[in-house]
Length: 411
Ligand code: NAI
Image 1 (cartoon, rainbow, N blue to C red):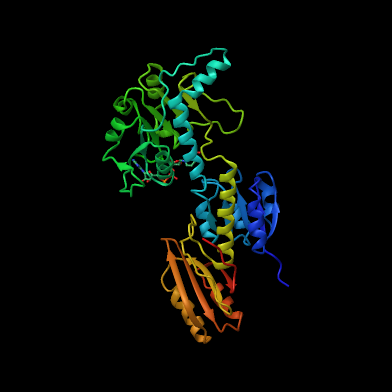
Image 2 (image 1 turned 30 degrees about the vertical axis):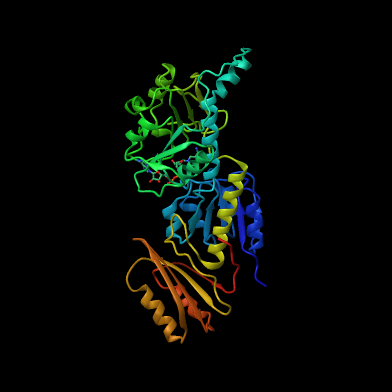
């Protein structure tokens, strides 16, 4: 009887991950907190896969101490908490979930645009302070207004669809040529977009080019009374320049979810030039923080771990060369071999198999400069000792096998 592989889930990952892993044959150990040091090592003992969020650090020692670990699932966007090179050097694949919270950010952006055009936060704050002001002055519908989207990627394009459904005109600027959705129109430059938009929303990544992307010069190009939303990265907007433009009334409002420096933990002090600007909505980096996003992240990463375990697929892995593999046929054996990217390894594998009279039905290979991942689907495999020969080749980093039929997934 074979024992079920162990999946260790840390940091209160959404329980949908447990269901997916258990259904795929794993036994799941769940620990609510992040772990470090000896506690982490104890929990990792015998684990085939581990799921973490942002607080558990998987460093070289963890990969060196736990040879059973074939994959790490980061149930979040970032992967800084994992030593990706150490994981690659031990043949462990690392997965994350870069886009599961896209819709949450898009919805918050639309909500903020409506709140700012209607001055809802100001009216609410006034009423909390006992001041009744029923005036319609400076309050607008979003219908018919022009929304300028900077960065037409996953989030920007979702915002585009939602905004058009509310009757907004959508223009966008992206450095890459993008297919406009619906009636959206591209603009040839950031400056052109800034001049035309009633509301500008930023959805670019942090790059050298986007650091300080929106400063005093760009704000001066925006329409008087326009609105700026930044739910992207804190380094993209010069907050001193923005606060000055809000205070002197040049801009009509702003919503800021991300800051150049952000407190590490709940309750830590927070300071920003944006504080006490009445026309600014400030939120603590919660654009992607919804229960739906957490569930979607858990499902996505758990499925990636299962696909990798059963089929060897490294599609979307952030460290091992990416290969998307089909489901194995009954009676086939799949050899999953991660090795140092040097000449001759494939030839040696082929020779070993040919000498044993084994037919290779399919072969897949992807490499980066350091590491190669080769997958051989073979039939007529009778002598398990042959695997020792492949596994003990000096270039081998990790070898394992899987056999068909395995579980199939909807994509
Ligand atoms: P994405 O990679 O799908 O899209 C980014 C787009 O920006 C791409 O189309 C790219 O070509 C474009 N771009 C890059 N440089 C540009 C430039 N200089 N000018 C114009 N366009 C440029 O990324 P996604 O998923 O849409 O995320 C966008 C941003 O949202 C990222 O910065 C991400 O960190 C942030 N984010 C924030 C969250 C929050 O909680 N507030 C949650 C999730 C993402």
